[in-house]
Length: 532
Image (cartoon, rainbow, N blue to C red; front, side, top):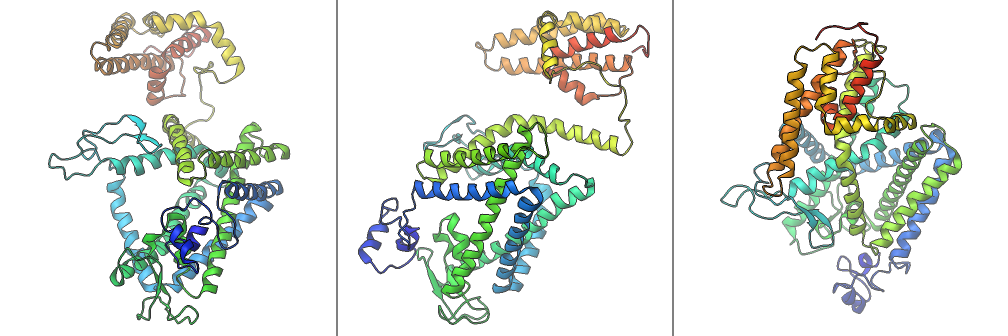
C-alpha cells in the first residue's frame, strides 16, 4: 500500500510526497497508492474479496477430497516450510530455548489461569452495555477497580480478551464442530482427540513459539541500539545476531535489525520476514507467506460454505452444487457488505463481526453446557455402561417437529393451567405416582411459586426483590424436578438424571408438568410401577 511505500516507515525519492503522506493524511491519494499505482480503497478491497470468493467457489465445487483437502495439504506444507525456515534463519538455539521455557510456563500456569476471573480487579465496575465513544459497543468500564489503594488491575483485560474469546470460540463451536465431525467420520474418539485437540495445540506452540521468539529478539535488540521512536531497517555486523552486512551481501547468521513496534498488526509478519536477507529474499519470503495466507483463506471459506450447505440441505453430506455456489457467494457478499459498511476501515469491520459473534455465543453457552452432559451420556452408551435401548419417555417435553407443535397447540388449555396454577397438575402427578406427600408438596409449590411472582411484581419498589424472586423460583423448579424424578421412578424410565430433571423443571415447567400427566395416562395401571 502507498502508506508503506511513502509513509513514515520508508524513505522515498519524492520528499514533498513523503512529507505529505507522513503528516497523517494516509487516507487520500497519492498516499494510498502503492508501487503499481493501485489505490488501496474500498473498491480494491472488494475486488480482492471477490477474487478470493471466486477461487473458493471453484475449490468447493471440486469436492471435499480433491478440493478442500488438497488445498489444506498444500497450505499446511507452505506454512511448515516457512516457519521452519525462520527457525533455521534466526538464532536457532535461542528459539528452541524460548519455546521450551514458554511451554513450561504454559503447563505450569495453565491450571491457575484456567480458574482466573479477575474477581477483585473487577470489583466495583459498571457492567452496563453501551457505546465506548469510539463507535464500538462494549462493556463500560467505570468506577473504582480492585484494591482501595488504586494499584489493582482494571477489568479491561478480562472483558477484552478472556470473555471476548470465550464468546468467540463458543459461537464458532457449532460451525467448526459440524465440519470436523463430517471429515472425522469413521475415526475413533481417541483419534479425534489427538488430531483435533493435542496436535493442533502442539502446532500452535511450534508456530507461535518460533515467530514470537524471533519478534521479541528483534524488538529487544532494536531497543538496545536505537530508540523506539526510530522506525525502519538497520544492517549490522554484530556477532550471533542474525543480521546482514549489506542489503545484497548475506552472511551466515546475519540479517537486518527492525523495529516491529512501528508496524501495524497486519504488517508485522511481512516486515519480520523482510529482515532476514536481501531485497530479493525479502520479496520471496513475503510472496511465499502471501500465497500461504491466500490458500488458508480459501480453505476457510470452503469449510464455511460446505458446512452451511450441509445444514441447509438438512444434513445431506453431498449437497447440490447450485446450493454450494449460492452459499459460497453469500459469504463473499457478506464480507463485501462489512467492508463497504465500515467505509474501508478494517478495524470497524472486524469489530462488527466480533460483536455479532460474541452476542450469538452467549445463548449458545447454555446449550453447550448441556451438550457436554449429552456427550458424557453418549460415551457411556458407547462403552456399554448404559443400554442404548433403555426405556424412555413416550412423549416429548419440548417439541422439535411440526407434529410436536401441532400437539402443543392442542394442549393450550392444559399448558395455561400448568403455567398459572402449577400446583394442580403437580398434585395430580404426585398422586398418580403414589407419593404419600403429594398434598404437602403441592401446597409448598403453590406458596413458593406465588411468592416468587409477588416479589417480581414488587421489584419497581425495590429492585433487588427480583433477585430474591429468582432464588425462590429456583426452589419451585426443584419441586418440579422432583416430580419428574417420581414419574421416571414410577414408570421405570431409565432415560434422564438429576441434571436433566433440574434443567427441565426450571426452564420448561409448564411443558414438563403436561408431559408428566401424558406419560402417566399412557402407562397401563400398575404396569412396571413402583411406590416412591
